[in-house]
Image: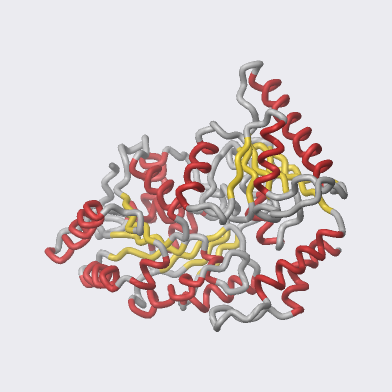
Length: 426
């Protein structure tokens, strides 16, 4: 691993270019990356919006390697945490970056080893770990976690907090998480420790809500562009019958597979993609309606020779991990999913994202469509649309956000619900 100089030997900001090359193999920075890193290295809070695939993770991973002590990353999904930790420890450019996770999936023996390493600070010895990933539940409910954080802080070895997928903090965000509301305790408890909040999308209202909830001080905001020039968007009229739509989706995927063979030769693998569906499974469906939910869409695609599987919140976590692993490995080519397929789904070579129905919000659509083309190569984003879907979508939005919520979430006003539909009705 690249060894940073002593804290007083040089301004770590001056070492960013050298470390970027040695640790991650990058010759240059993209867009606001360097400015974000300089801000957090100098101890200031920052809120960062960068497009999917824009290099958000590097904005805190590289500073973590140049800082004394441990950078604590709060992330919402176990799969996302596992992927990030795995990529860091197996980093080929520097022999691995010391990173670990403390989650419900961490084995007791590993958890003990992590705590032992962190508590070396009590003897004045800096931990080996540079990045520690935790879930918001760990922050909200673990007293032991805060004891360890206090020990690190007392020795000047708590470098920063990172809130990944920060839009989850906002009650008006499209992917709200209840435990994220409690993350403001980090700034309350450790007011001088810088916080870096990162996400791919957040409206001005969501940004303000996140900054307030996290209690960020004198925050520097970096609002990146949302343009993804390698993505090509198209709206297709949705047939009245579900089976006809499935036939169109299948034809489109077969065209994508043919393009893959034209590019890579006869033996080239089929194209990788996602088909987003509005529902998990329709229990009772008239024979003429055809399959329209994620499970039935998957069954239909399989029936015509397309490698597909379904992914939704109704499955157990092990089932979802198994499907995701098969898709990531290229064993399954098409994921037929609900919005459960979002954060934590990180496959670079997704050539198409199809929305069988309109997304629930502009922010949600941006996140979902943004799964395509993360390798920078051309990719397509297709939306099937018909007026009748607006009524279904409005009912779903009102059902999710306007029903009584036992004090856990405010009711969403008719005005707010209407805002979610404006992008469709215009």
